[in-house]
Length: 154
Image 1 (spheres, helix red, strand yellow):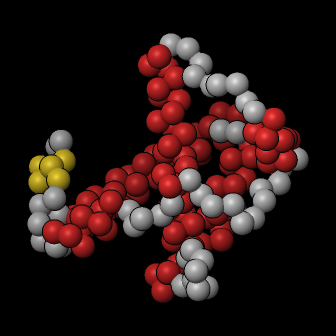
Image 2: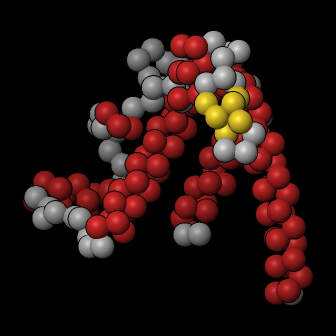
């Protein structure tokens, strides 16, 4: 993993560690809460992944020619590492409430909203629990790999 992204991951984990649901939802008037900021990041990352998948499918780079304004913005953000405030997020990266919550609000917590390929039909709360259980499963594997890698490289 890129060292900058690794540091970001650690910083974000540290920033939200121990926050209650109420704290994650608190926001200043007209501003995003911590949960919405995390959703925004998630949307930007998944959007980037989809874009790179399109590049791979096409078999060629899809980047266009940058305008002078775009070059200047790229220099400020990527070159200098400064993200100016007050810039509106693109519509695709504006938090809308994650799809599980949207489905639950629309269809209720008892509706089987989507089939899992192995477990079959699940409700929104079951999907959340599944992801927590699945994440813990892989977290344990990562810890085991980390321990093994440390022993092998020591």
